[in-house]
Length: 115
Length: 114
Image (cartoon, rainbow over all chains, first blue to last red; front, side, top):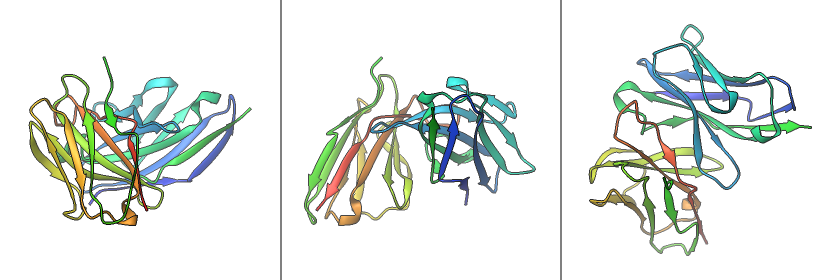
């Protein structure tokens, strides 16, 4: 069965600093990987997805993620943090056969931006 | 284009009662998925409906059920509510079912069971 581990339930960075949110996956077959963001009192919004077309995936709001099969990782980065990036971020995985609808989510990482 | 609409936003029920939550997908989307979000268990997949048929089901007891109508609107029902059912229930829609059709989430229904 597939699973996702997000290292660090809370990450705090200064405005303008690099954002790095870590995600490691476990899957018995080549995975589809996703990053979602959740703002307070809202649902989840897709940031980016990996579907084997390219290992470096660019998403919305300046975020990107790199798929590293050897490390079973899909870490999310943003070169310069903005106050509006404060939210909870979820990494998710889906087996090829299950599509993008049945996802297994990590426990989430709450990102705080310090002025 | 309007997003995914979930009603009601907040709901308070008593243990043992049943509840029905509603979800209207984005226009043109035919797949609707439901997730439960709790502080302890995180986000967990409940089920997915596509063209009025349940395509996938998560690991939840039979008290949790759902359906989809011909206009793609979906409802989920929880019978004999337990305190542990208190959660944010998220509905998500996608154009079709499959890997190239990511989920678009609604803002959720927050259910409190007392």
